[in-house]
Image (cartoon, rainbow, N blue to C red; front, side, top):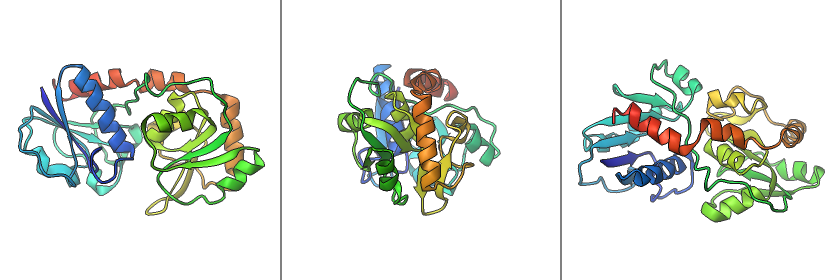
Amino acid sequence: MRILLAAKHAPLGRRQIGGVQSWCTTVAALLGRLGHSVAMWGPELPVPRDRFDLGIMANLGDTAPAAGLCDRVLNVCHGIIPAEAPVGDRVVFTSEGIRDHWNGSGPVIRQPINLDFWSPAVVVRENLTRFSYRGGLGFLPAVAADLSLQFRHVRDLGGVELRHMLRRSVCVLATGRAALEAMACGVPVVICDHRSAYQGPLLDPDTLGSMARNYSGRGGVEPTPEIVAEAVQAAVGRGSLRDHVAQHHDAGTVTKQILEAAGC
């Protein structure tokens, strides 16, 4: 099949780092291995001239111009901002929390993670790492120092360099797919971030339960230096959650679920 993956930001567009970009890249690679011809698009790019058998669309508020190029459309609802509202007859959601927000009724298909790439390694771990392109949480370097760790803020790395940074972390502070990629590397994770535009600082101490909330931090508590330090120590004590990612987020399994939901 000819398949178009469309989202607010294309992996080859102006902002290459982000959850939906990583989602598209992961799914495109797996679809390619299954023999499909895949294109990725975002509204910062020219609208494709081709026709597609299937469009797998996110952020339909932004990507609707490309929907008309596709004989069949599956809307993947990743979040709760207006542009992510579910549209059409074929809709899936990446978590129960997102589905509940929109009063939806489609299936939940989890975030896909490439477990072959995001994998553990035996290396020296010495960093408290924040994996996010956002600002805020300026107290984190002091928290790291109090825990006798070096602080690193990973904003715009990708690929092998990013994996190396995650593997060298004692603990990673992140949300969404960033948190899952760190978990898959066998690194302890705290679901924590700062969304200054609309939600403020967020920390969810229930890491496994946060799957139902898309690992977003919503429903948690406001992070303070004391709360973050306690959460980091708890995460390190709990250890690796790679088995959790393998059970619920294996990219091969998720990609097949996407095609089934699209009726393919």
